[in-house]
Image (cartoon, rainbow, N blue to C red):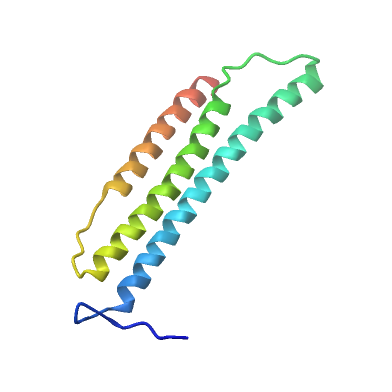
Amino acid sequence: MIAENPQKNGREINPGDHLANERTFLAWIRTSVALMGFGFVVVKFSLFVKQLSIALAGRVMPTKGFSASIGIALVAIGALIALLAFLRYRHIEKQLLNKKYFPSFLLSLLLTIAIVLISILLLWYLLPNV
């Protein structure tokens, strides 16, 4: 196996920066998997409630039906976060190799906005039922 050159353009490469970039990427992946898992649970729970109403009452109970949409949205946002995390990881990796790192908060902002919007939708959906 040929060892990689530890220098790029005559400057020393810091492995700690690259490992931190990888840890951050994996944290974003965990977040996206959690969002997709939560979305899956929300969709399956709405199906469970429909089946339970059929078993108990013999018919489907009328509901607003937003839980399936919210669950699907969570899964889609989780997949989008995974894609954006990979793109961000590659972009930062190139910056680190070129010794020109510029922080960006776009992914953090997008995730925060998505979570806040989903939270508002969930609150709007759940509050009338309390």
